Length: 155
Image 1 (cartoon, rainbow, N blue to C red):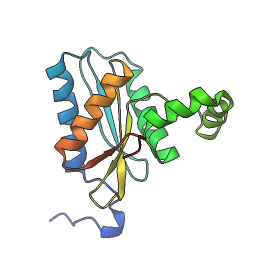
Image 2 (cartoon, one colour; image 1 turned 30 degrees about the vertical axis):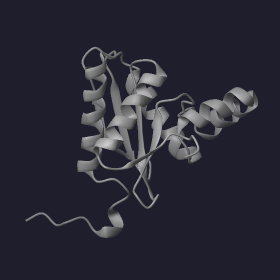
Image 3 (tube, one colour; image 1 turned 60 degrees about the horizontal axis):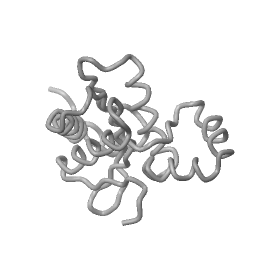
Image 4 (cartoon, rainbow, N blue to C red; image 1 turned 120 degrees about the vertical axis):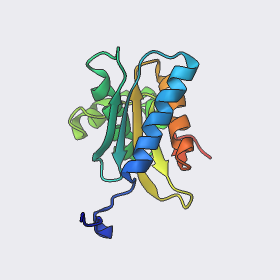
């Protein structure tokens, strides 16, 4: 019989929560007629829990979606705020790129995932349509899982 995960080994999101987020995000994109999407869900430690790439996505979409989620986790706020910061401080973009090994993508579409007590559980990144539409799908996925989205905007 399989052994349950040790509580110390659970790092934020469960696989089931991550699957709900990804599936609901993709469903939102289909319902709105968005271009094909790729969704990456990371746990609080930055490890991939789920990757889903719809048919028709270009080969770079997984890397972009990962970079959006990773950038949000790296900075501790959603990429909507990260995008604002890089616009107002261009030198910051170079530093961010250097510090993350080029992994952070500072555009909307990377959203932190929190529980009702504001505990950080992970992040979701989506790429495929424009960044605003990608973020809309992130929000729908997180809401479907009964969790709280953190885009970087003040509450």
